[in-house]
Structure formats: C-alpha cells, structure tokens
Amino acid sequence: MSSPSASQQLHPSDASAVQAQKSNTMTIRARGRSFLALILSPEAPLKDWLAGLDEHMRRAAGFFNRQPVILDLSLLNENTEGLVDFQQELRQRHVHLIGIEGADPHWRALQSWEWPIELRGGRPSGPVTLPEEDNKDTPPTTPTLREPLIVNRVVRSGQSIHNPDGDVIILGAVSSGAEIIAGGSIHVYGPLRGRAIAGVDGHPQARIYTAKMEAELLAIDGFYMVAEEMPDEPIGKASQVYLENEHLKVVPLQAGVVKS
Image 1 (cartoon, helix red, strand yellow):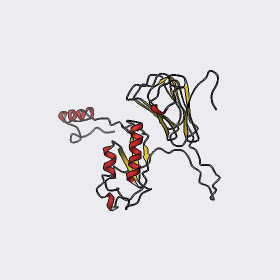
Image 2: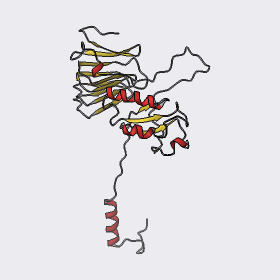
Image 3: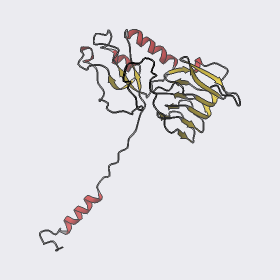
Image 4: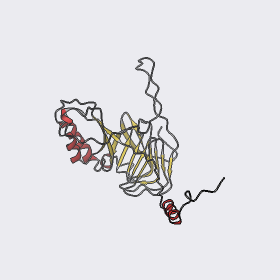
C-alpha cells in the first residue's frame, strides 16, 4: 500500500483533535426493565364504583401507592355518567395511570383527559391455544411458570421484589412496608410483615408460606385480605395462605402437616 500524499496526511493539530474526539466518545448503555401493572376495569354507575374503591383503599391503605395502573374502560361507553371527571377522581385517590385502553380518545367525555404515552408490547403471559370450536367445558389455558427468584437477604421497607413468571423465595424477613409479587407461590423463611401478592396473571393454585405470619396484606389471584381481616390463630406462627372458593384461607402450619 502506498503512503498517503501530503494532502492526505493529518496536520499534528488535526490529529490531536481526532484523538480528543475519540477519547470523549460517550458509551450509551441501555437496559430493559419489566414492571407489573394493575388493571382497573371500572363499571357503571361510576359513583358507586368509586365508593367501592374508597372502601378497598380504606381497608388496604397505600395499596395503590407507587403501583403502575392501566385503566380499562371497555365496560363503559361515551355516555357513561361521570366519565368526564373520572380521571381527576382517580388522581385525587393517588392512582397512577400508565396506560388507558378500551375506549376511543375521540369520545366527547374524554376530550379533557390527559392520555399517557401509548404502551406497546408488554410481557407475554404465556402461549394461549384458541379452540377450533366453541366449547364451554374447555378450561382456560394457564400460563407456564418459570424458574423461582431466590432472594438471600432481608427485604426492607420500601423495597419491592417482582417475579411475575414464577415463585419468589425469600431467605430472610420481609419488613413492614416491603412488597413481594409473584406469578407463582411466595415462600418467606422468616417473618412476613409486609405485603405478599401471589398467583398474579391467573394462578389461583398459588400459595403463600411464611415462618411467622405478621403480614399487612395477602393476595392470591386478585383476592386479597388485609391485616385487620386475618384470623387470630395464625398470627405470629408459621402459616400458609391458599385460595378456597374465592376466599383466602390463612392457617397455621403444623409440623409435618401441609394442607393440600
């Protein structure tokens, strides 16, 4: 290869500028992060639905704090009474909307609404097989759970552990104000003083186990119970929680005996 001509060679000052430019090049790093969002599907009349929401929030104070929420309006229509002010009503209750679906933004009642940036994609919940013909006896397909998430430390107040694709195993305590969310079951090998939400995305067979039951809130497959509603017997004891006829059961764990 021939050497460059004088017109092709860099002047020393130009070479220094190029070198400085290379050294100042910023490396851009990007990482993915998944969040578990709650979906609220209000029904008419909205006044009664909001009253029900207030009652739930009174029983489970702070349940919606810092929780991303998707609002599904598919059960309403553009003439639903109270729809104009409905978004403001949710804001006053500190419900944080990250998405709105099931409605046309051009509805007159929604003209004053602020619409979040449209969400696309999302985490798939597993393959679903569509039946070739309508068969009411065919049970719905349940998403397949993956590997459990093992946390070898105390989960402190304000921290949130998410594994929407499998079990969560905590080898320590869960402090008051902490939160554990699992697609499958939750196992806490220490005191459970925070919130445990198991069986998200359609897993009613999930369970919650703890070495010492002192939870603020328990939930499986959308059915929940706050501390004030828990029976006295399992409090402070090794316990399990399971869903039976759409009601949560909280029972002590006896040595060598597990309710199945």
